[in-house]
Length: 502
Image (spheres, rainbow, N blue to C red):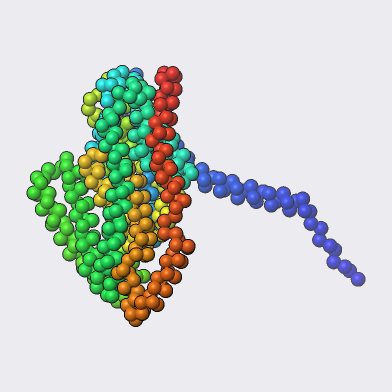
């Protein structure tokens, strides 16, 4: 009788084949991870080559190198700072990651190109007094050190997942290099005092404003018996207020070189835009809310479109404000190197602005998703209503600051608004009489039963969500505190190295 021959397997061969498969998978993952850095390096090379067409003479090499460093800083701004603009919308699931990246890229570029000039002027020559530095070579090296140090710090922060202020980093870099170049007298300490004050005030204003908007929404909409009718009444007003602020800012800043309006005309434009947007949004909200159930889950859908609009508004404001961090020192370098003297006035070439605008958008697309998820989901739990409060309050705060040419930290403002929403929810959940009365009505007037529900909900929320995660608060605040001194020290060290090498 024939017996089936045993199958002989070579275990060594199987192991070798498994190793080959694992090596192929590892190589595939590694190649995907290298795409973004590769494209980033190509952009740096492109920025240097592009700048070579606009410069010449003995200082061309310095300007080309500075353009590469400015492009590197712009990439890091997009990777780190832009998360504050669209993170709340992504965390609230009003936008997909792809949609958020597209909207932010478009509006960041528009804000940088249309309305970024005045803040660039503040950063490039408002912090360091050019006449104190005196020597053009030392001034150029100081600005290069400031750019490189701030870019390196923001890059490190992005790598470890910490949303830091790029404004902090670049101002710290400028101060450190200025002190190293010409001593403490080179720094405009009055300007630094105003900027430092804004860093403290902006998160406080952002937090208070976000809490106030959330309180308004809860009082007038959420804890009303007829939520849908209340939303139809009040939500169009919030949307109109946001639109009026945006249009006023655009006319006074982005289009000021095309049209010039008097104060009364500007007021008329703001009022007209308010009522036009109110009428349009009133129709939209009424149509969208038809057939909706009278519950919070349905109500949140009405905030999706306003949240998308507010995210675009904040991206525009961020582009206008934070493009200065990338091209402000670069513009000072170009102006000084071309004239071979420290200029009292810095003109911003279009190609310099484009490096900043393109770099911010590219950095966002290549490296931004990591911090977008962190800001949108890991600090506190956001839904469309809360995220709308964060975006609206942060946008108005940043716009007002950029209007006055003050380079505030959009990171402090936006994250402060998130903190404000989270801490307000903790307080409101525990102390609101209106909320308790609403729960009592839902439970047929049985106050004791409502209090039981209140205790259960509060305990679950605190245990499961903790509303504001204290560990993230501590980490972020620590990063805020260390950014300026670290950037300043690193900038001073880089300046000494550049001086020694040159």
